Length: 296
Length: 122
Ligand SMILES: Cc1cc2nc3c(=O)[nH]c(=O)nc-3n(C[C@H](O)[C@H](O)[C@H](O)COP(=O)(O)OP(=O)(O)OC[C@H]3O[C@@H](n4cnc5c(N)ncnc54)[C@H](O)[C@@H]3O)c2cc1C
Ligand code: HEM
Image (cartoon, rainbow over all chains, first blue to last red; front, side, top):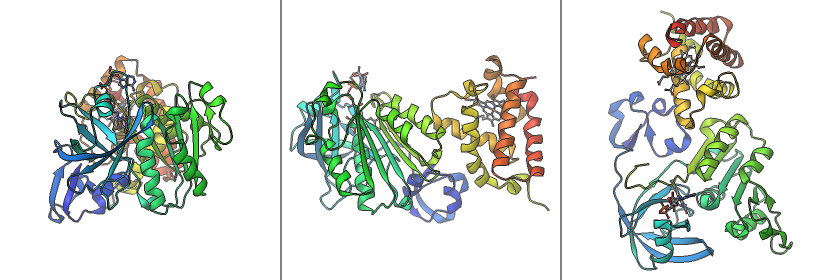
């Protein structure tokens, strides 16, 4: 697969590709007439680093924070894609984009503080407002395309898997998405549902948006919640299992799956067997690999 | 000259339409699903497409020796006549579901059948 940076792509050369791949001007080289493409990029080539500056940082909960970074030069991206951040020690890790492109050029990231995690702890403790950071990207095909405006959308995410997903929801709402949007967010305890207020508000404001929160471990963290704390009921159980039980997909349904790799891979297969077309399933598995040793 | 079987079946469009239906049948058939358990769904779907393209008489680069090599590890794990029959059955049912005419299904099955000895390492 190649990416066209200049010229016309034949429809033939994009047959069978996901709509998010087509939107990025990817095509199958064997099907493309050469004279219509003037410039191409090998998509697997080593991506160059660019710079950004941290402009804001706040805590969502004890171990999840929001970073707002501003690239030094304008960045063309889709919410839901990810960037690779490189810190001063040369550690490189991927983080997903929760914001949608706007005039301000800010990129919003959500970081979970992994126990003994090198990069996430560095981002939490050392990375301060005003600091510069290197990044690669945007990368990835897990994002919204408005050609599916009327189709039902289902999003399932665990932990900070909600970061790309809320980006995708923001993009869908901004694009005037007409179909239903069903968002399952799962965490271990109530504080892990770090977008509870934002997603509850979206649920109230948009008739086609439904937020379905759940927690899988610490049931006590929700037992004392009042109607006031959470007008939306929080289920006890794994969000992917709850989702698979209740969804009624059609061949038009688009599914986005992000977060824990094991959850993503298992749910992907189950959702496929439940009837969702393989080309309509977009995933971002948060694999914990060190990018210096292993490209991904 | 008449169109090739691949074109008459519906070409690449038919492969794309068939792959989900076929892969679902394979994954839910307990007698053969163990051969397709590889976790990466993208890889699996790409391979199913190669299988369908070949069976539809489409352009492919596989020789009998390639088929032998690709399936040799499976033969070692016990791939046999019954498994071959099951896969062939799913292929036939997939085409029927897509409304491919009987005679064309027959032609596809002949191609699939011709790989029998290589797939089973006979
Ligand atoms: C495409 C992609 C997008 C991502 N997007 C985000 C995002 O938006 N937000 C976010 O917070 N993270 C995201 N991640 C994960 C992120 O890239 C890092 O892997 C994560 O922050 C941990 O890095 P670290 O350096 O802190 O931990 P490391 O130093 O790499 O790991 C510390 C230790 O913890 C273990 N470990 C790490 N994670 C887990 C785990 N989940 N369960 C059990 N053990 C674990 C490691 O094996 C190691 O022993 C994404 C990953 C990918 C691949
Ligand atoms: C009916 C005739 C068959 C044909 C024409 C056929 C064709 C193919 C082709 C073209 C590939 C791809 C090879 C590659 O690119 O790596 C493949 C791989 C594979 N086939 Fe078959 N196949 C047949 C029967 C079967 C049967 C009966 C089984 C098992 C029940 C099977 C299981 C597999 C598996 C598991 C792979 C993937 C191997 C890997 O991971 O490398 N096939 N087959």
